[in-house]
Length: 284
Image 1 (cartoon, rainbow, N blue to C red):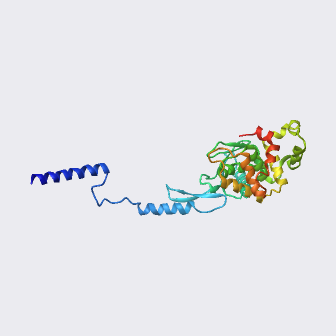
Image 2 (cartoon, rainbow, N blue to C red):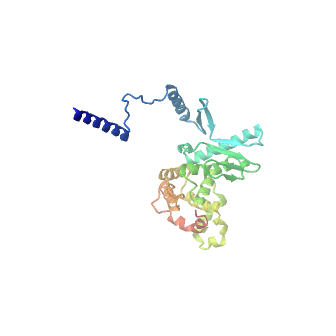
Image 3 (cartoon, rainbow, N blue to C red):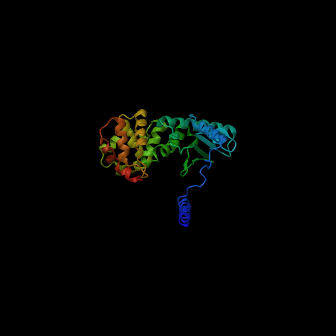
């Protein structure tokens, strides 16, 4: 009899130790935590609010008071601006945003990190700033084209992962700005081909905007159109070359434009060789 009692005690002790070491709950009917019905409704409302598709902005849910409000793609902060001036600036920025949107053919909202652009207007310049270093542009009142140039840089960050090569970023922004390449670069690129001393005679063309202009000037000579440019940007976006390394190489950029223009792989290699002094001066 005492032997059986000892066995029972041993088994009971073993069960107690096992439950402690495995963390098994002793109460078999413990209630499973659930989301309160009201909270479920609020989550559903927030989802409906924030997944609305709109142009030039997004909707955001305010959890504190349960309201859905619109946030413009470009919000302007100007302490010294009158109401009339703010209205004028908003029109300019909205038009510039639309121009950049048309140039890219993609919404920056495809990147969930993009929650709109906040622009601070200072006395003689503007400042973009979000999750990256602010950039200044001293061309506020030159109209939507100049603003489109600056907003294009913001699109670069959210759709391509970063600005890419600086010469490419500036050439692209100029192209989307108004489609006119600066300093008649479409013809100047022919001088680069003919004159081996071009870069010695005209070192000013190594400037970042001008090197980018020469690159896009030759692309235009090869048949680049806004539609084909959007196609190249889509290739760059889908390739995501910036993941793992901050800057895309010129060859990756070249490959995207070869595909968009229907060229063979490596067919634009000569262009990188022609522009080497300018590329080296602006290498990232």
